[in-house]
Length: 89
Image 1 (cartoon, rainbow, N blue to C red):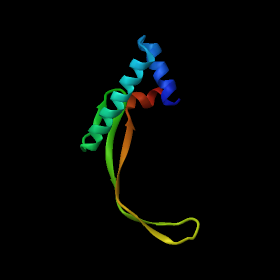
Image 2 (cartoon, rainbow, N blue to C red):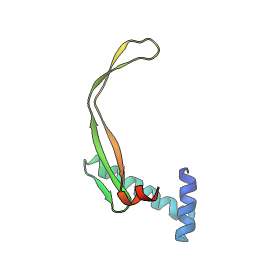
Image 3 (cartoon, rainbow, N blue to C red):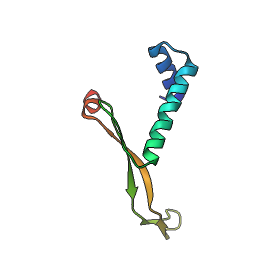
Image 4 (cartoon, rainbow, N blue to C red):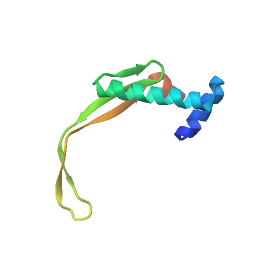
């Protein structure tokens, strides 16, 4: 499912226009982004937890040349599904 299909599904289920559904989805994604950017977790009971994890700097290998390269440390977004969501899959 892509974003357009999700917007259509939300609009149909909530009986709202696609523009309103798209606005709601954009607002949700913006809220998640701002929360994670500030270093906090977002917990949606029954769905899962969004969090930020730090990935340490490490050495990698260029697959084309085989040369060793340094990969910088960075922050990555994580999602852990709740027990309830996992049980439905």
